[in-house]
Length: 325
Ligand SMILES: Cc1ncc(COP(=O)(O)O)c(C=O)c1O
View 1 (cartoon, rainbow, N blue to C red):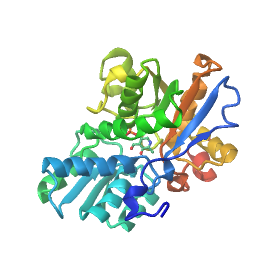
View 2 (spheres, helix red, strand yellow):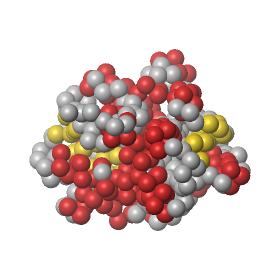
View 3 (cartoon, rainbow, N blue to C red):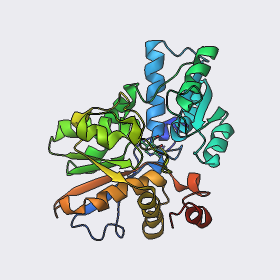
């Protein structure tokens, strides 16, 4: 029997690589998108969720029927909730208040308990979504996957996203471009690709208001650079342990206006209905177009689906009200 599954989890991964035909017309080379919304939870984070749980089971830190507590921008929560529903766990999530209401509702629909925390407080403030998750995990004896500092995050991409891209491009990939948050997608995939061919370049798109680009360029962590921005899922106000500078060649700063409008162009011109970090990643490609040569094979990751952003970047009133249009 073909394409028949025992449960939803075996449909994760093996997402298509789709050529971009219109939004990159000014580039001299081919650009393909790794479209991760084809995963069952509509984002790349499904890959991560199952791997994190399996590693935790093996280490004995997650017991049968236990509770998973995680701070998430929505997509990791979605992956964890899907996996938990089939693997027999409960989920509690904390999210920053800037995240779409749709994401909160979807997680609740999948059976998770969700706590919305203020966006505009520092990461070490007890009200931040990081600290609230840590407190709840302690109170309930839950397991905190900690996608930021748990190296099983980048390992998930080393084991799946990297090999898939290498095989799909038949080793032709020359540039790998991705909007980065925890660093898992960027570093895990890049490590695998660079082990196959050290000349492959890994380029990170960083929202303006994140401290990561400055850290990569200077080695300094300057928290005063942290600001509020609307792109959801990428950028950080600290440097998660999943980062390893040697697997990153370049950071490109992208503003909200650029990322959100680029995301809308992707939907309109390519028929790919993606989230804001897809616009952020493609904008990084467009902003550095002079570095590409005709034989290059550029892959840009589109992390998630646009349905989670219909009340924001795909809503003209919201775009105008925020000054993005
Ligand atoms: C939509 C979206 N894009 C990009 C990222 C960044 O991926 P990573 O955390 O692997 O760096 C995330 C992470 O939450 C995300 O949800």
